[in-house]
Length: 386
Image 1 (tube, rainbow, N blue to C red):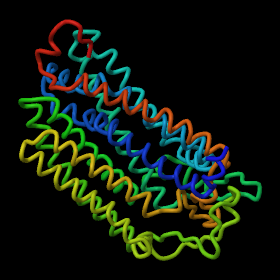
Image 2 (image 1 turned 30 degrees about the horizontal axis):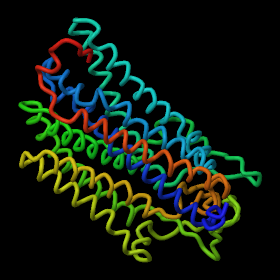
Image 3 (image 1 turned 90 degrees about the vertical axis):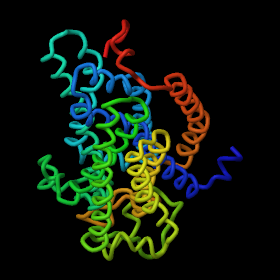
């Protein structure tokens, strides 16, 4: 228990805020190219054999990549229970749509080649497209809604209440700024999927992927810049006022919050966080350059850099807020008042230190074993079901 005493409540909260970001970024880096490849499937694969090649680039790894999604959801549930309760209930319809789309992916992999019918296979290919494009879009829409603020408030006994006019319909989530961030997310992951396909395929599939990836990268860069300008001049930010208690009880109602100014005011008080958006723009530019130049490994790495920069810029800009409230700013959830107990965070950290290296080592081994390009000869031989 000596280590438990050395790691204060404030430190553990910061560690788990960072780990939550790491898990979400890891999900975007790995399952992100799976979603991007799914969204690209109808456009880069013109024949059944070409589509089988595309599918087989992600077929052996998508399940392992999705582990990061499960870990991220589990971390939110255990480390940030109020965040889990408010976000998963408030975004219920969006989460349902995401999960329904993700469920199409394993079913499509399993059944598309069970019959020789072209109509049958084309139907499952469309399902795989939905399973890639819809989550990529809606994850970005969710991020946009978080930046805009969510219409909820907490009662004195910390029960959550929502503004029914917003949450009564799924269309209420599709606000203009949220659609812009959704477009950034979708185009970013399409670029990432294109980078993956240039590494794993050859011939016309890789050529088509490069062409689409360049366009997607341009859309992502423009959309990301527009979102930054919108945040600067069109959306109010949130700020803690007064004495901020960083190691107190997890009760948001104990804090004083004002909704004023801009989210980007954080760059004035913490200028070092500007490295995140710079990484985002540089990663996109270098990935697009790599796609144009026909590079493979470096293009994928630059695409990963772009994702790290863009995703981390959201968390760093909002810190310490993790879910602001538009109805009652005082109910906004922050790093300092929405966590589990000190002991819970410590036990979770011990588990993470033990198991995360195992997961990383296994993931690295899988990619090493499956290294190399997928060819038409590979998928037309015996033993392939995709």
